[in-house]
Image (tube, rainbow, N blue to C red; front, side, top):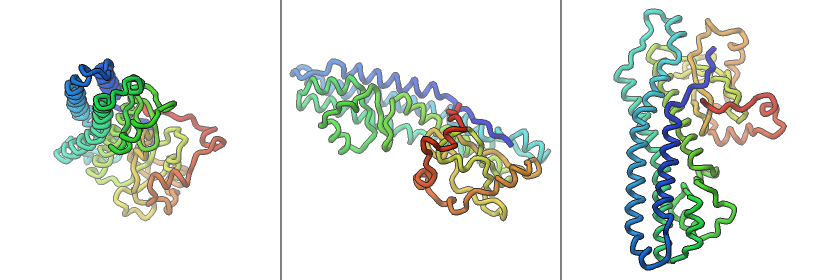
Length: 314
């Protein structure tokens, strides 16, 4: 059965976009000082920061319109060969109004996710400027700004962070997502992979439902995290199957997840695929990703880590 890793359309473009914005924001605040003249220029700097963020928002919206729509369309087409073989002339491959509306919803969701990062960038750099204007702590602020911190947290958390000594936490272009800290370029890359994969999954499911298909199999990508328990398992989209469990969680199961869904047709499957496919632990169906990660941790000596090599999504 198909187990290919879908590509992430436009990934390089969104990474370059975030890297360019970060560079422009650093240029804006590079000569920030504590003199009266610098304080008077603070308002101009804030306006410049907001202008660059506005440009970022517009650009990432255009990116989503193009590439998230493309990812959705790829999802609708990925099982075309096997569906044509199985359904013959009954197979429907049009990109109808249903798909256009679903793709638009996927675009809106991607823009909302990207906006969170843009808002964090704006808030952080504006906070730096205002802090310098009020406190005049030129040397400490210069170190922080030079490192290009992007902190995706609440206003109170950011405020507390700015007042603390950053020490080893200061790394060029860094952004915090939940409890994970990474480079801003890496975050844009992760976001592109994840929102594109979600859109592609939605396209796949809608095409299958449109053609009366109910069973899907999770791909085997060589990952070593908790979601390997889903690999090769078969699920029922509707939940009406008496053999296979209902599809509750769908890829991506977590940020940067490499898994995808594809049509599963029992007549074309091997006996091994049929037997293994129906064996997903029913008690895990309603577990959240966080609970699954706790139940199935990957230890250093885990056989998954020793026998599989992590494959980053294309």
